[in-house]
Image 1 (tube, rainbow, N blue to C red):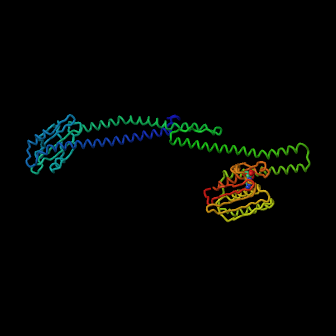
Image 2: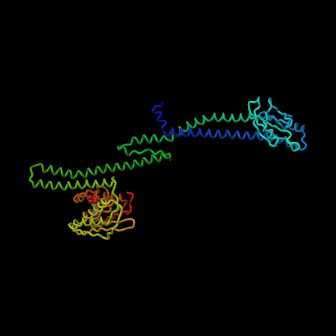
Image 3: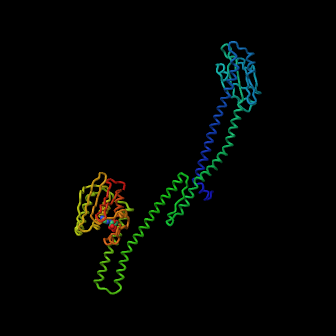
Length: 476
Ligand code: ADP
């Protein structure tokens, strides 16, 4: 029935908004039209009742019931009863006993049929309104029957009637006008609604098309602000902020990939060069052995680096195994396992104030964090130097400090040491086996635990690495 394009239009927000507004306007028009129609009918009916009551009152007020004079009553009826162009009152004087009409002004062609109930009401002294339909008239009449008393007894009935034609005509007119303007208003709403919906949703089309064109190659592209100060401007800003973050992550991934390739190339090139040199001529078994031993060291560096990268990946993207861990126990174990190394390097190592502090964290990662820091302290502290490990309870947090009297880090480099692949002195660092990933792993682990890692260092004097970890970090 409908083509695909037409069905697509029906599903648009613009179409739905327009439809909803038009439908609402139509309902409002119908409800308000009906309300005003019935209100007008009520007001006009009341008006006519009041006129009939006033007129009858004007006539009857001159006649005290004791000395009712029929002739002057007739004269008064003729005098008071009026006949306007649009409004004509018919007045009749009805003798209750004789059951006949005595006087009539502006009488109708066919007699008004008065109901028994109205006459009985009048006999009981009650005035009554009644809607009657004379035979020769197209419209109903409103009839007011009022008793006229003589000697305390109802003697006559003063009947006043008027056609309801003006009311019917006015209501008809009102209804016609409403029906006439209703389609106009609805059409106007549809056109206006569609125009406004199209205009205000126009930026959505732009946002959709512009977003479709953004790929990894033009991630720097940003959507133009709409300056509409509405939800669409907020959406544009949100998409732009998301693009900022994506571009940033993308740059970091590219940088990381290039750093990793660069770092891997050096040991691999050295392995290749060694093999090439040794193969240039026949060698003794001793020479082959020497090459393989050298190669083993390079392999070890590559394996260490790949392991570090895997830990980085783990702290970046995978779910951690968080539970209650004893920080004091971890530090004691590390102290014991590094003891031999420090002794070999003739470095003094002590533990200061280590309490049993339990925190919520990943045991393996925390082990890795402090082992990296201790390993660095040993690496960058010359013989006869000192290393001190301490753990303090700060209430909601635990503070671990690893202090050394090593070579220290210049103020300039202190900000950079937590970056991936950063080494203060690349050539010396390579000798010590590091590729500049140790501290960035530490930083990642501390971030995962919602903690803080800081360094205070004086070049040539030593460094203190301080790690603050919250005890109850449950939302990891
Ligand atoms: P690496 O594996 O090369 O040691 P890290 O990320 O662990 O890499 O450290 C980055 C750099 O910070 C190191 O190259 C080193 O120069 C410096 N550094 C780290 N710890 C210490 C320390 N305790 N004393 C002096 N320098 C340090």
